[in-house]
Length: 396
Image (cartoon, rainbow, N blue to C red; front, side):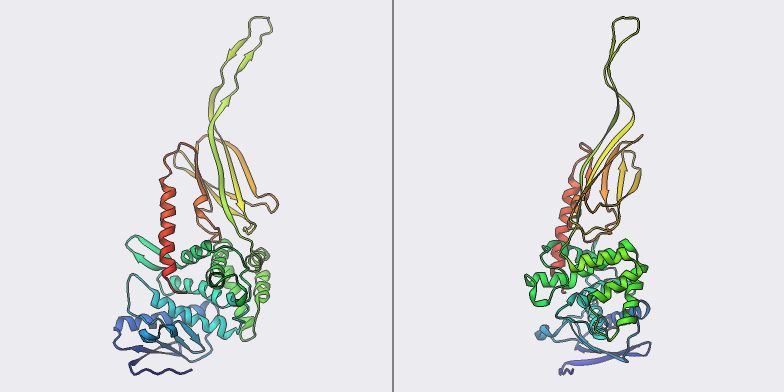
């Protein structure tokens, strides 16, 4: 691989014995140059700690000129091309993200030598997941976009892209067999990233770190396939492996929904009371008793559910309670009946948004009838649309 441009200038840096060379267009500010080196160093540091060592001594970053944008965002062993625009911005961190993403390819495809044409998720998808973690954990930039109080992180971007794409093909599909280019794109990049983000949030970061490190140690330079990745997951946690298998090899999906919430005062029975002495029976009307009776119905549309999911219950006095729902594989709903001394006003499935594969978060919450207005639903919908508009503008 070679490159040449009369406008190239060269800058170098080093991390742990790796020489990092940047061939950039002239002029480029020192802050922008340092941003590229910081992104590269963050990549090497994260992979060295979480996955495995970089086996080479050099990495070259190449900034293509504006009229060669098609050459940008590409990877080769020890050399990657960046965005054409590397100007540093405190609001958008796309230039750093692309560099982190392309360096990641030196691991997930370059070192493993997985089959990009037949199982693209093993490269693009795992890489899309780890780029988000590097941005957040090592590059110290959790959000890819930041405008005032509005921000978007990488897991959100991938969730939105996944939710917007119909589930018509399994993630593991030969690249030329997807129903459309959008199907290929989502199943190669965003959906596997969303699958792994869900695994991280449900099963824990320690387990997915263990999975990635074991995968590197066992399969570096050995052409692994999907079943090899899942087999290692099965050694760590069989339920995690089952979830990965269903998410990657089938078109199963999930959409949790709060179907109904009812909460009302206990009712004291009314009616006639007959006396032993034969006198006229007395009559009492039904009356409100002390405490409340609650009934909640939860529904899962789809089969791709984790072993359990949190459900947040909010009461009229502002207190909350979290219960565990263990979705049944045979019956797609559950109904809870119970009593308490406080009125229930709201139910929310997955309040921490752990199950990022959920196709629609807006139906995860329901309030008891007549409890305030529903303007918050419009706010959620508006936020999702804004985030979607930003996400489609971002490069893969």
